[in-house]
Figure 1: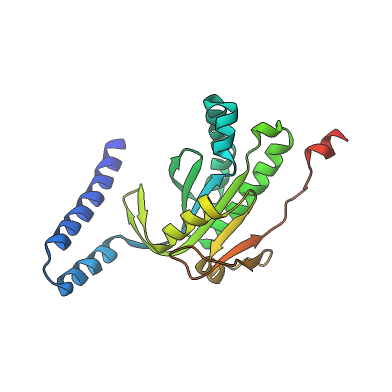
Figure 2: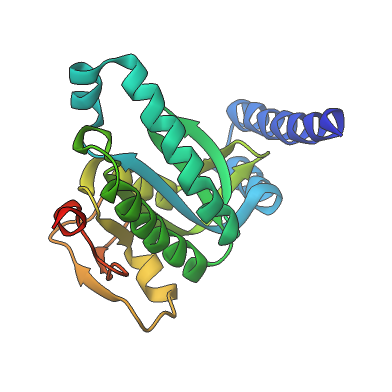
Amino acid sequence: MLKTRSVIISASEDRFEKLLEQRIKSSSSEEKEKIDQRIWDLFGEEWAIMFTDMSGFSRGVAKFGIIHFLQTIYESQRILVPVIDKNDGILLKVEGDSFMVLYRNVNKALKAAIEMQQTVKKYNIVTPDEEDILLCIGIGFGRMLKIGDTNVFGPEVNAASKLGEDTAKAWEIIVTGNVKEAAELGNIEFIKTDSAPPGAKEAYKVQYSFENDYSKEDLNS
């Protein structure tokens, strides 16, 4: 089973690289356009893509050390991967404190993002402050190049990455205009941001509510 999966991924990457080689050798813009169309026909797919990050993580590593860093990553995966699976997400990559996740359905991506924030909120209630998980999320949606099961490329990928890893603060979910336009959820509100990342014309903060919004102080009172 593992060998079959490896062959499939390698075949996709091999085909993609061969087409890129042909494009490099092409002498005219017309030939390049034809190759571009072949690449999009082979690898172009429509996905919602999510990038997550943890607010203040680098400062926490510097203060509490590498074991604290590894524990927080382990715990974030333990509590968040089931939420991703529940909402039919595909976890493509985990790099440090960041996840890259694909969803076929925009609404499921949004539901997952909100549930992930609710999950870490509940988790943080019973943890020491220094072990809190402070999640930032960015989501994009549109046609992108998906090569095998590990790589995706496109403007919405770049925009979602920027939103999740650089723009969003703790507890925030920020999405591109494409996500807002495709969403069909009545229980959330989109607030337009002052600026948009490269790859997106607009960006919006998702307004959502926490279920049973308790705090550590509530538990100790």
